[in-house]
Length: 105
Image (cartoon, rainbow, N blue to C red; front, side, top):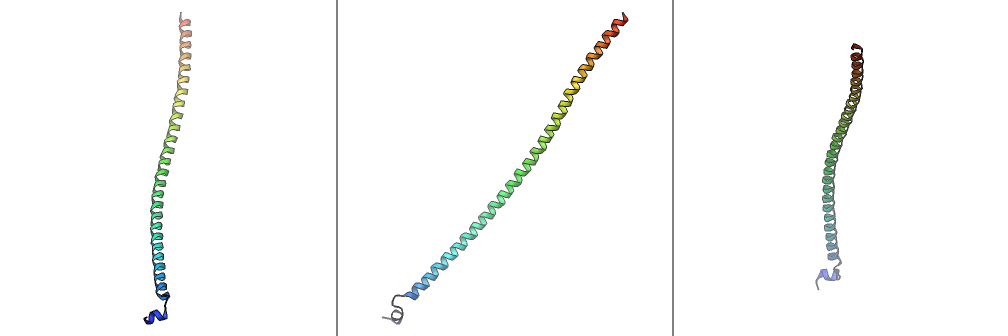
C-alpha cells in the first residue's frame, strides 16, 4: 500500500478533484448555452423589429391609399351631383325654349 492509499484509503481527494472538474465543465456548458441563447434571442428580436418596421410601412401605405380612395369617392359624388344639376338645368332650358317657341308663333 502506498502512502496516498494509507492517507486517503477511499480516494476522497481524487473524487473531490473529479467532482470539481465536473462542476467546472457543467458551469462552462451552462455559460456556453446562455451565450448561445442570448445571441439567438437578439437575432430573433432584430428580425422581429425589421418585420414590425415593414408592417408599419405597409400600414402607412394602406392608410394613404384609403385616404386617396376617400378623396376620389368624394370627387365622384361631386360629379354625380353636378350631373343631376346639369340635367335639371337642361330640362329647364328646354322648357324655356318651348315657351319661347310658343310665343314666337
